Image (cartoon, rainbow, N blue to C red; front, side, top):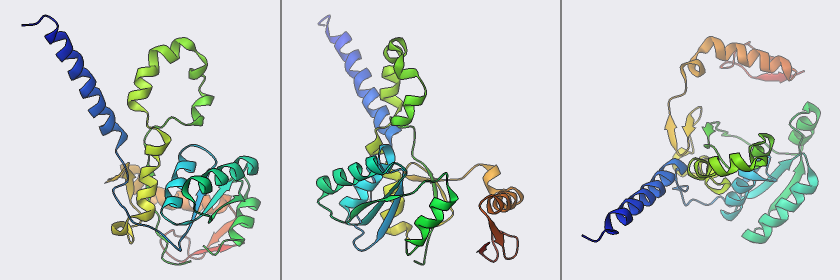
Length: 228
């Protein structure tokens, strides 16, 4: 037996296994090929990271995409990039500061929000985005060297992290699905706390109070919110 055969086989097995593990962790691309011409999509935080990639994916599918961001200079630049890459002229930037209820209400008045709205929650996975700049890890050469391989293996690219949100937005089989939780591209049961009706009621009531809404019947499942 060639003395190099075993080491080469081991190295090949390790590399192949690592690639397969990374593909599994990443979750893969959106399985739906559906297009959304004529539909309006609002993507918050769309000037970078997962938000920008989600806006890009939806623009590729023909949607009327609104990038809603606080920093209009970055938002306009992102919209220009997406229009150039997708050749979809229906991509525009609008100002929205999610830390300001005044900004949120002004933004909402400009949008015709429609019917048949569904709401789902998702965990896109851990991605390599600009949020990492706040951790300080990338400022350390030692941390970058030691943890770099783990980051490469376990962290998704923004492009892959945008696939679950794209899937929930376009998949025809999910058109009437609402109130569900998705981990990546798969529906999963939420934590027991998320299904606690009493906790849900308290959360709804406190949220309504914080944003200045009063409930018609005091329940998240009955009546509807009335602006003060």
